[in-house]
Length: 352
Image 1 (cartoon, rainbow, N blue to C red):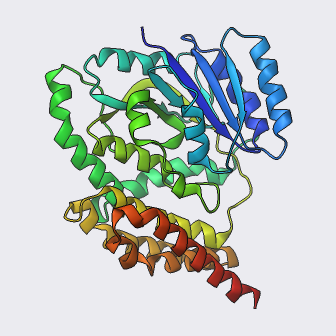
Image 2 (image 1 turned 90 degrees about the vertical axis):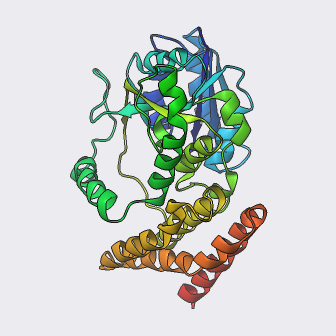
């Protein structure tokens, strides 16, 4: 049987860690180790809680203070402490069912020729039985999955996302090996951050891209990026249909409006430029897709926050040609220059 480790990157979310960590510890198939990489303002409180949990379990719980307030960097820091062949990356607000890990590991163990480089857990709409969610989601958050399901179907037909197009293209190119092995697990073109798991050797070969979180800490699309690079490197991304996880998204402080719009677009362009070949269908559809996204942001300019988001998205979109034309080796440096310049320009405009 394969062993697995859990890595949790967290920051200022002790309230959620108090709910999720006991669920990770209590899996029917226990982890060989749990690594918590925390960058909280009150790190000692997080450390004390994790150490208290560790005293009541046979599962080793390792706590480290994050070297950087940067989600991909924290994930890599945790990866460097892992020795097990599978690494799982639930978010601190991922609520696992008792057998979530067992079903994930079942998929890996059936894949004897290691066709799958990553396996996704399956999202569900409610928390595990007996688990109290600390903050009841608002109506807005409750309705998001239903609204997004309809919108996603329309977008797939009219304005397909380049991320999905490229993931599907790579999946078609790779799936014959899984079919030849008799594997019939669902294959997916992308993987969501709160349900990510990987073969450790595959992940180590690509690693999370800390450039994506280098300016504001959170890293829009970093989960999609790592999944696409796993596919680009020659491994499939599968799903475990019976491995349930509830993403306990509760209302919280919003990101600064300009940064939200800016990094949504800049990160999208950066990932496409880095991962996708020039002549790929996904790359060719990028401009149309981003025009559509700008249109959606423009519709939300009814309040000041919406106007800030639109301004950020528009500023990043204006640098599209520059980023796409860059040498791949120069992309991280260019990303930093573009981000710093546009954020400084917006700050000077709004402060004047």
